[in-house]
Amino acid sequence: MPSGSGPQHLPSDVAGAQDILVPEAMEFLAELHRRFADRRDELLVVRGERRAQVAATGRLDFLPETADIRSGDWTVAPAPAALVDRRVEITGPASPAKMAINALNSGAKVWLADLEDASSPTWSNVVDSQVNLFATARGSLAFTSAEGKAYALREDAPLAVVVVRPRGWHLDEANITFDGRPAIGALVDFGLHFFHNAARLAQDGAGPFYYLPKLESHLEARLWNDVFVYAQDALGIPQGTVRATILIETIPAAFEMEEILYELREHASGLNAGRWDYLFSVIKYFRDAGEGFVLPDRGSITMTAPFMKAYTDLLVRTCHKRGAFAMGGMAAFIPDRSLPEVTAQAVAKVRADKTREATDGFDGSWVAHPDLVATCREVFDDVLGDETNQLRLLREDVEVTADQLLDVASAGGEVTEEGLRSNLYVAVAYTAGWLAGNGAVAIHHLMEDAATAEISRSQVWQQIHNAVTLADTGRTVDAALVRSILGEECDRLRSEVGAAAFARVYALAAALVEDICLSDDYTDFLTVPAYELLVRL
Image (cartoon, rainbow, N blue to C red; front, side, top):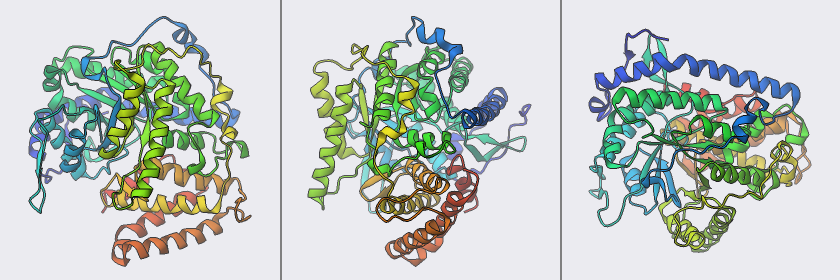
């Protein structure tokens, strides 16, 4: 990795960039890359090697070499006061400022400020997110719309505590290069936020706190821990100030929950269950394992399916055994006051899902819209009573085996043409929004992020490569059928958004979705080739 020449390519024509991309911050980023970029690269290679082993054996299991960690008597560091109560968390991008303010003012205990799946990584979004987080840490974030409507941070009630989610280890940042190599998105997101805000947040007892996405092993968690240790030393922040919640959203990570917490034990505060990314990872890992790993229509896979319940029960058991918080999944529904009946039905489903999580022992859960904060809070209030969390509920009744985690057939359900159409429609619609600079895209009353597009296009690839017969039409899924249905869904989208908008980004999105769905080789992340398009737009 570079020996210290600093950034060689750094566009600064985004408003606020002059305050964020200061020389001292860029040198901090350069040092992060000198110390950690090579290890990141090596771990990405290890990901591929491990997946190849799974392809050969058709099996994942708990690691024998870390059995002593799983049987050991240890806990994570006690939670700071700001993170003791996390009963409702709202997620969303940190740009634009309006959305950030609405999240902070929502009444949620925590705002997951998402620089990853709910953010399209245009350079404007990357910088503006940091500008908004800088202002948030200082209580000065404000915004006035073109119509003159003013948005400001509320003073009549507490603001949500900010937990920042940087990009995953696999994503690069093309707008910053060190010795001709793109920077690592995760280190850019973390590094800029930490450099500018860690001291202020630590002084206020409000962080810095992070969500860590897409981890596949405890070795990747160890890398993050080493980053935290170095960053705190470099800026004179007391060790253990950083707290991280790790998303268990890949199938290999589900087999290393305890090890991941152990590696981050001085900095860990919890684990989170991520539904769509988890299912996407199941397909990715077992894509060549035959019919037994073919998932039914994604809309029919509930969190009560035995293999999903095994995953969430294990997460709660692991967290509470180790003194960490167990965070539930996303309620992505967007209430619509013009459709009261639809909204009422959806809110009832959200309430039932949050009730399941609270009853199972989760300490809190996610929503994507401010109007759902009250619903989630009420459910957890009912279960928590006077307590702030459920760490006392150890779930010692839970014993989960590898076979249970891998029992995909327990999902039941069918693969239908309706589900195939939905996957193609959503994959194109989301990718088009992402290419247009919007990572949180409203589709059919749901706030979708990149995870939805990933599971959608992955299911199509899996169905083609297993020649799946559609239950409702009897047709076999092959390249010709996918092209035909994709064309019909694109016609539908063109009629909805107009010819000009379709030509601008939807056509690009459709071509990309077609390419990765029909390719012989599976594309590990849709966002990687999509980013290559994004930086050229």
